[in-house]
Amino acid sequence: MAAVIAVTVGACAGAPVERPARDQPDAHTALVGLDGAALLARLGAPELLRRERGAEYWRYRHNGCLIDIYLFADPPAVEPRIIHVGVRRLSGVAATDAASCETVGAEFAIGDERRPGMAESY
Image 1 (cartoon, rainbow, N blue to C red):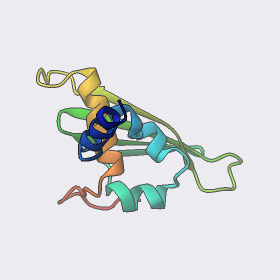
Image 2 (spheres, one colour):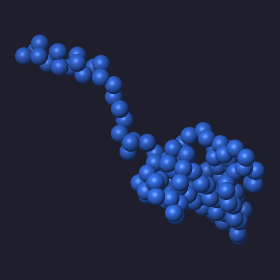
Image 3 (cartoon, one colour):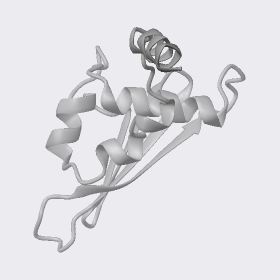
C-alpha cells in the first residue's frame, strides 16, 4: 500500500498547479485606497475626469467595459483617495457581459497597461 501512495504522490508532484480565478484580486480590491497620482501612474489618464467639492470621478474604457472610479477627500484637507471602483459593460456592446467585464476590470487594474494617446489630466 505504501508503494501505491508513493506512486500517487509522485505523479501529483509534477502536475502544474493552477490558481483559481477567485484568488486574483478584483479591480476594487486592487485600487481602493490609492490617491490620484498613484492611479494615474498605474492606469494612465482617464477618458473622463470630473471634480466637485473634494470628490472625483475617473472613467476608463477598456475592451468593451467601463471602469468607474470614485475618489473622496476625507477630511477635505487631504488628497482624495479611491473609495469605490465599479465595472460595467459598455452599452451597445454585445460581445461582453457583466462577468467578463469584472475580469477585464481586474486585469486592467492589476496590469501595467497604459492608454496611448490620452493626455494626462491630473
